[in-house]
Length: 488
Ligand code: GLN
Image 1 (cartoon, rainbow, N blue to C red):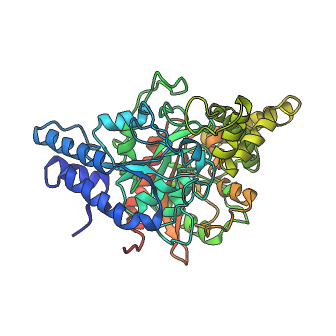
Image 2 (image 1 turned 90 degrees about the horizontal axis):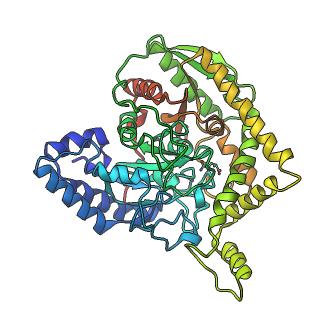
């Protein structure tokens, strides 16, 4: 019998609705799988056994009464441990928040609770979402279910590993420079970074506020669209969330892509990239052409400045956002003789190495005398990067390129070399800089059976086109159906 945990949301929803399966049954099968496999993978920081079972029971009772809340009802979700969950520990994978239990829910979590989804646990990540390998978690690294000696990517590595190993039906990630798309690609799942402003950031612990976006991580494109139907929309609690109508994201899924113009940015296939990655993405592009799309080469000439620019802007914003973890209001507090020693020791003991590196970098680029040379200059570079995309989108409907320059690397391989680690995000960072939507989806495997992903980049608020192209590609291929060869 197929494990219920392996089914997609769009497969599960009609079964739940018709009472062919119960939410209790589904939740149990997911919890059992977590119990059996997660000691090897390390995807979960918190498993909500009792809470999830109680939620599932209440879902079944409502369905029995004919009160159906929609396709997310009864679906087991595992949000990244950066989303505030009322009454459930939220750590951001940091020692400084090790025992923090939030008094309220983030808007996105609240929406999924109203849709009657079941929260089975909170998943692991790089501390404060800073990293590309999940090795920066203060608690434990996450292993890639496709090869347990390799990283799952980051910072939403727990999310990607949990979805690919069927330890939940779907997850919620965050993406500041690639943290949804890169791990999705390294674990062979689908992940969307929505347009900046499309999804509320309220109640999600901030890293770099002008770049952070919340997004779904799922087993296929249709599930991603279903999740966006719940999460997208304006929120008065987040002044950067934009008040534009939310379409039905499943509505355009089945439309043909015939005649659509898709751009292939030439800067995204540089010499240094893994040739198997480039080949798989080029094969995928051929497939899109077969499906009727017109492929055109385009240029985004300022791509080369994106990573350097990001590593000024993101740490600058992080240094300001993380100032609140001072041992006074919440989280870890070091014992000390006086107030300033308490501040110092709390941060020294509470934050990990990478987080401290970012705070120092950020404080430096914002300091008097350096502000113009670094921060202001970076803002200008950001504008130029955004304009490149605007130019390209005058000619094409969306763009296609790789997600990550390599497949999953070995645990420890880049951990000692921050610069190498930062380069994992060269193809994802520009999208955050420009505030655009980006969809990562499976498009192949290398000779070691490691997943390869492709990225579709869209115009602002045009997630629909990405879903349409992604779905057409999935219908014509089998990559998204492959699951890691895991045995307990
Ligand atoms: N890997 C990038 C970083 O370390 C992006 C992280 C993210 O998107 N949260 O900053």
